[in-house]
Each structure stands twice: as structure tokens, then as C-alpha cells.
Amino acid sequence: MKTKWIHKNSKKECILFFNGWSFDDSPFSHLPSDEYDVMMCYDYRDILLPKEIEQLFADYNSINLIAWSLGVYIANLLLKDLKGAFANIIAINGTTYPIDNLKGIPPNVFQGTVLSLDEKNLEKFWMRMCGGKSAYQHFKANLPKRDLSDQYAELVELQSIIQTHFVDWSIFCSALIGKQDLIFTLSNQKYAWNSNVECIERDYPHYCFDKWNSWDEIIEDLSCGKPRN
Image (cartoon, rainbow, N blue to C red; front, side, top):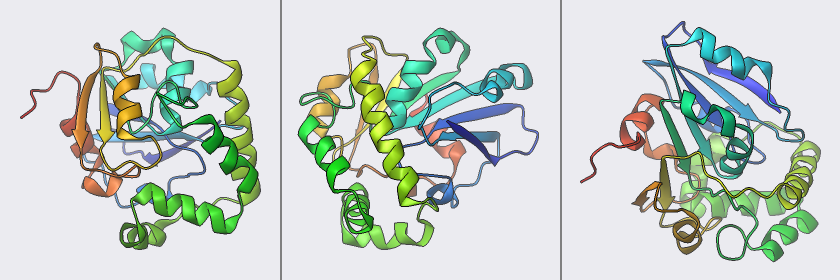
């Protein structure tokens, strides 16, 4: 697993962001942060928790965890013992059962992605992730800058990790569910979350970070226990 500071400006509060498969920081370059330093975790070819994460709790007054897509599963797997240390623990368009017919991505669909992954099919995946061709045109301006070979290796390793590390717990307190999500479907996300997780449904596709203007806005919008309209 790799870490990278997206924003580091000696703030008192921090956002720890668990990214999705195949990504780096490029698709989030449009999001500023006024109140938070933002550390990103990505590239899950190994899932050894970096020491930099433990150091966050010594360096900041509060830490907010945001996890997206397959990062939801990885964060849930690795951070169980730190659950009580976070101010907010927010899931976005992912579940703790990422390869599952009823609660995640159907196994045959996941395996099909593994078997057919090439540049053309990755672009098709990203287009579905964005919800269609129109939204994808905006995403194309900030494509991840990673090699296909390591994206493929990451996908294969994630499949192995998920199949061999079953979890029956959730560290999350709120979950954004995209009604237009074509990767983790609405019905599967709703079925996956238990009654202890506050679910927020929006007409968003899987990649929905163009719906907010800053990291601060994401925390304000999705923070745990916030009154909803």
C-alpha cells in the first residue's frame, strides 16, 4: 500500500482517504481543502498498514476517515482496532462485502474484469464508473497516471485478499449510496449496510467526487450523525 499527501499545510485536522482500485491522486486534483490536511492510501498490491497512518494520531487533533469503492473494504479490514480514534468514518459507494452477489460486485463480473482487463476495457470500466460518456469526458482530464500492469496486479491481489479475508464487522458510521452506481448497485449497497450505519442516498454514479467543491464540503455533507433533510 502506498500513501501520498494530497494536501499538507500544517492543519490541526486531517482526512485519511482510502482510494479505489486503479486510482492515484489525479482524479481528486480539483478538490481543495481549507481546514484539513489530506492523506491518501492507494495501490493495494500489499495491505501492510503504513507507519505514516499511526503517526497521524500523534500529529493531529482529529482524524476523519473517508473510504471509496474497494477502499471501503480495505479500510474496514485494516482499521478495526482504530475505530474509536476517528471523528468520522465515511463510506462512499462501496461495501464491506465487495465480491458478493447480493452485497457487492457479483463474482462473475469481478472475474470478468480480471480476465478482460486491457486499455480499452479499462476505459469502458471508467466510463461506467462515471455513469456514462458525458460525465467521463470531465473525468478524462484527470485520469490516473498509473501503468496498466500495476493496475492489473492490484486487481488480482485485491481479488485474492477479498476471497481469503472474510470480515463480519463494519467500522463505518455513515455510507453514501449512489443511486446511479453501475459498479456497486443501489440494491446491493442497501442490502450490505446494517442498521447501525446511516445511509445517505443520492442520484450519484460510482465516481462522484465532482459533486463536491472541496474535501471540507465532503466532511460537512456526510459527517456522522448530521441531521438530514
